[in-house]
Amino acid sequence: RLVITGGFVESRSRQQDLNGGLEIHGSGVLAYTVSNALITVRNRNFTMSGGELQFVEVLPSAAVRSEHIHTDPRNADRSYMTLNTKLVWSGGKMRGNAEIGGRDGMHLGGGVKRLEMLLHLINYEVLLWDTGDVLLTESADLINAGTIEMKHPSQFDAKITYDGHYEDAGVFPERQLHMWEDADSAIHPNHIGATARRIR
Image (tube, rainbow, N blue to C red; front, side):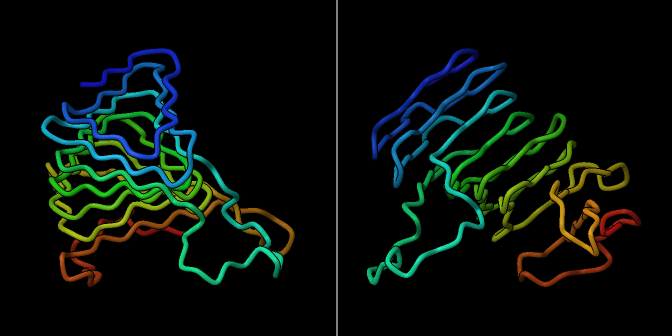
């Protein structure tokens, strides 16, 4: 079991099997500094209450020159982390050019949680959302390919917020967007609270 509560842990491996789970707390940082890494977490939870999980970063909207276009299939050397265990996420930041796929469910609690720099967190099972917003920046995304459940629906006020700026007639207003999806990927208005979908 890898437990990081402070400091900086660097992994230069393209393949890693965290057989006893993973924990990141406090100011701890786990950084995968080699692109196209394949990481598997299994047998015990991936618990994150603070700190950072970092992957190699690429610009989310970089220009491409014709000589840089590849004919072979590739996805900008994206890294993949497969969670064959539950993700328990109550704080901290995940960032970089990677996909993290939760195949045994997720529990979101605590305060604000951040996804940054193209990181995609994908739920394939049941995501139980208790408390705390998820803040997205720089083309990061939280993707539901399973089921999302609110732990306390009558008190639920968490949201997904894009903390970015869009140019609009010379000003840069903040946009906020939140939508609920069912397992069939359809948007159901009866699951959306009064402030759940807001663009200002």
